[in-house]
Length: 223
Ligand SMILES: Nc1ncnc2c1ncn2[C@@H]1O[C@H](COP(=O)(O)OP(=O)(O)OP(=O)(O)O)[C@@H](O)[C@H]1O
Image (cartoon, rainbow, N blue to C red; front, top):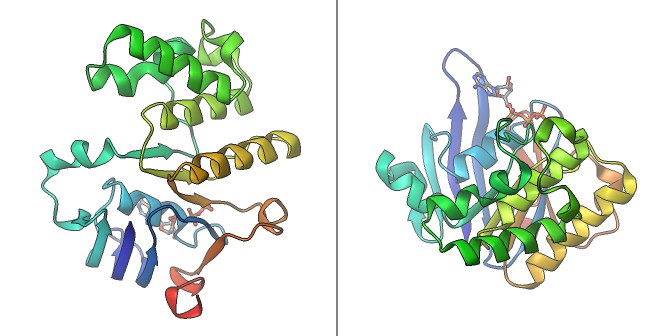
């Protein structure tokens, strides 16, 4: 489902953020992405959804080489991806319901389907009672969960999560991880970047570990 072939990325003026990354995440697999701050985790996730372009190598998503896609084709690719950002990126002048509905509105889904799916997504993250609230009225952890609801509302094939439990306490972090595992059991491929090693230590999913932009664990050769 997600394959990196000799991928390197350097931001202009900076040292390489990723160097010669090779791995293959199978359809329906779940994996964690770990590594120190600045190791390249966000960059790797951003390459998959076309927010950044590789300088070298191939990033293949569901058979498409993301690094070769034309700019106008990127939105079509993103329809299949749910992306959860570190800084949740909510629209502050829209309420929670609207924030979660946005991906469906963009796709032109009928109002009744939007209502049903947004309610289901908010229910999953425990925020159904707050759908009329604005992001500013929610705690950091609740805002993070709105970002998660928005990412799953369109039932993506692939869920990419950048530090999704960063603002959450232990109990909520475990709940979110459980939610990802449930989605994974329905066939969604999940890649989650995290610093929280205690959260994932008893899990059996593959761990891709980055160190200074290089993959030091979890590549296919070890599996
Ligand atoms: N837009 C950018 N322009 C220039 N350099 C960048 C940019 N984004 C990231 N970098 C650099 O690329 C490297 C990898 O950053 P990245 O954000 O991918 O790491 P990370 O593992 O996600 O870190 P963190 O855990 O702190 O979020 C770092 O050296 C960072 O300074």
